[in-house]
Length: 365
Image 1 (spheres, rainbow, N blue to C red):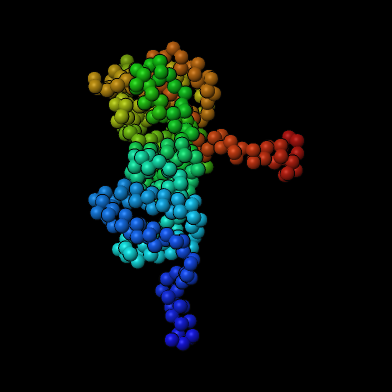
Image 2: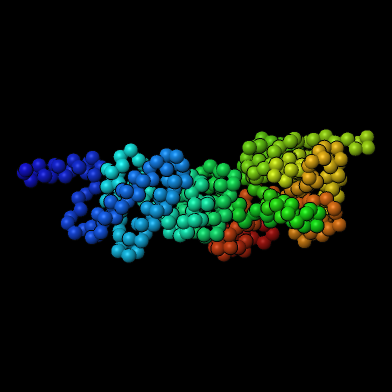
């Protein structure tokens, strides 16, 4: 073979997708043994991958990632070895996907992020691999990552929904409402109810518009009912808007009525486009009494009220709820997370005074 033929053959191999040739001695001494071990491991798992596609596949990925991670720590495996491993695994299993260099690096990162296989088996292995990639890309904190993995398993979020929940910092808002559940519900129900509600509720799908009254807020939520239900959380079933109630020959209407499948109770949601006022609690308490008498089935649990305001003072809300025997919660609604910015970002934003100085603002403007 001439030098020209050798040059052409090398270029053709690279054009065909083959990695560049690796010289003698470039691979670790035990590389061949590790490759054979991985081949046997993959071969033995193939049937289980078919029968239990997601869980078995992700546990397999964790095992591969663990082996790569150990070799990197012990023998300094680099990107070149991973590229070669990717090529060899693809050749050995041409009918299987997932052995690209990029995915092998994800497997390594996956094993590093989840050091305990038992936890992987219970949580991460039960959600799609692409969702696990989102968790790896967006979350460094192990406890927060585990929280979202469990919620993903519980709620069945898609990759896009999981991304949205992380970006809206759902873990910071869940279970943060001001409520009186510990005084009005049995301990077991109180704990569950406290975790069902959040604060603030993020209605970013409404855009930057600032509704002027409650009816405008209601209509905007109904126009985006799917996103609204998603923000309310799993278990909420929408019953109706402006639900009529007749009490003492007078007509009243509930802003929004839901039924929660896990709590097994009605949930009355009152919307306010203004800051919280203690007087709102008395009206909501009246509605809960009416729903318990007129709509509640004997097997249902006591109706719960959720008061959604444009803003609230937490201490004022706590005082307002005292003395009421009906379970109620008070939370804010927002179109963007302006006041729940992560602490690490708050210091990087300029103050109002700094902005005015930068813009050359004048007194009285």
